[in-house]
Length: 97
Image (cartoon, rainbow, N blue to C red):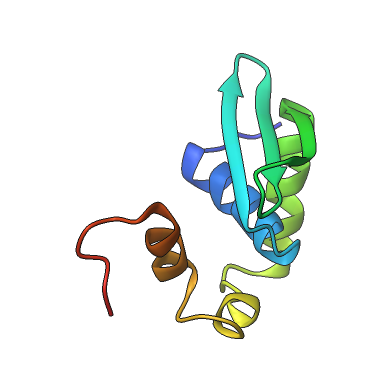
């Protein structure tokens, strides 16, 4: 297994979450991988997955083979973008257009 950066791993996991159209999620780390949880609009857990180092390496490699250009079609179809939607959900003061 090659050397993988946090940025590359999180980018690949984020791409998978985008493709799955996940609206709410949590990612936590451990010594041997990441735990990814997704939630529905009411906050009920939909998915709870433990990704080991081998799983993460495979995700990074597969997403890297697809290409580095992000795919924003899903988020722009229903709002101004992922960041704006995130800020609006978190009710950040000053998060306007």
